Image (cartoon, rainbow, N blue to C red):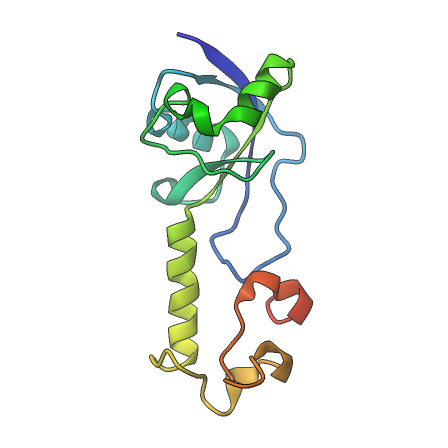
Length: 158
């Protein structure tokens, strides 16, 4: 079985409204990732090595170089077509960085949960008092809360 040495980090992104998180640790440790073994069988070892504060069942892996998420049910060799930059880096002798982070679906559910709690279960608009959000956080015509994708721009979320 072929294996690749990768550097690994985690991103504490379980709260999608905090935009000041950076991958940890600053000096990523290395781990050997088996090419033909499903990533779902390897992620627990990565999680343990990093001592990440994330829930293991909510974790996924992302390539730092291009942001692609890896399919945990497949091996690296089964995803080879989507991992061009990964294999190019390995061929050049580089150690690609894998980021352990919260699955996108878990983050979306968290965003929706926060939004629904702010709107008291209504998907259309926030109540008139806007729950302390500045006016710039709302779309000017619909008064719907803008998505948190640029949360630093709005300065809304701590």
